[in-house]
Length: 246
Image (cartoon, rainbow, N blue to C red; front, side, top):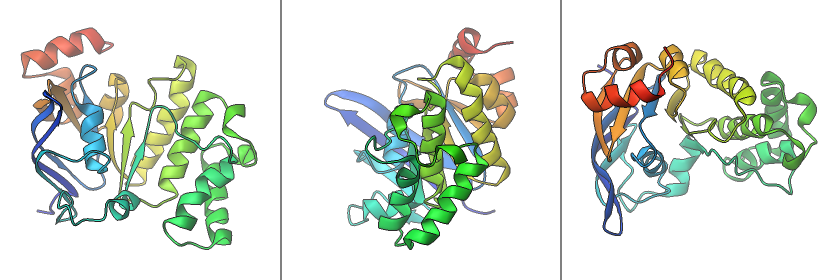
């Protein structure tokens, strides 16, 4: 069997006396979409930040493509070039145009020539319905447009894996669909995606695996239809009863 692209073994993370992750074991397969679900505070965002090395784990190991990236000798910036993270708050540079936001990373971090990065960025913006916004600045865009730019900026780096942290939670419901369409298209292209989300219907349609977190532990994981339609853990069932549209 092909080893997973990402593997977490006994990952723990504390903030002071508060244990946020309490021994996470999880495999993320390449070219699959894994959706993390669970109540606010269950550890989803912290798990993603640990995968991207924005947070240092207190115990356990994270393996990426067979390499222990929790080793303190690992260059975190090099890992982040291959594991992109998109936040719910967009985090675009307000003083830079959309085009500049997208090209900055490839030019500075990947060493790609400006002309090449610009062509690639314009192609990506066009694919996701943003071609006419290349010269615009973030504050002139809708929330949905800003979030799509944030996703385009991440994939312009050509990451091996893309982490998405509740990227639709701050959006007006009318704008959620346009962002989710981008994610669905990335799935068809084989992008490895780990996505924390409250969009249960989307998870059922797109996810290869759904992982339910509760109190910093994985209480259930499996194929989307199994976890969402026939949960085996009472905590999963109770959560879904409150959040799943049927």
